[in-house]
Length: 241
Image (cartoon, rainbow, N blue to C red; front, side, top):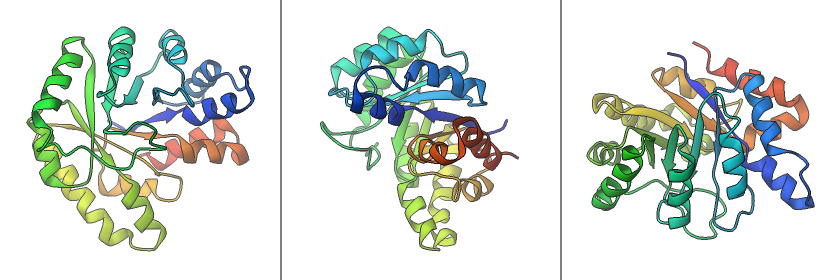
């Protein structure tokens, strides 16, 4: 199976909110992204609704024909309630703090094993596939396997940073090790954070069994210069077998 590209449209919502009104229209953008080749749409609503609003999530559910992935902090009851109401194809649990600008670490799956087991069970009972955000540490992946999650999402910020400094050979090793551990444990494998047109192909070449990547910021930035449809197709090309 080819690796799926889920386009995160948070940044389009940030642009809309900066001016008021409904330009750009994030629901139309999601429909267009699918038409342009995206395999899914990702959103990460936060309690302050500084980009994606809860009303956006409800409206998006009605138009997503590929896969709908909602990321967020399950320690926020409003997020849990929203996900259970909307019932996306996948929920990705991220250990954010209130007011955090962007996600910057994965779950400690050993320390939070009991909590994660409880929350994952809630979502799975509702028929929602669950992925949890983890750092590229085999021990954290092993811990994740004991929570009942369906997938893990490798947090790729350190990979992107080291790739940019020319250390791609050394940094990819820990990601491959974590990915192998996920495969051994029977977990699906996602990845995300700071992946772009420069570093994505190398990551996929080294982890060919990758199920899905979620990309927002870099893709939307590229779309400003390259066009939205062209940017999506270029990212898809990096993931091609």
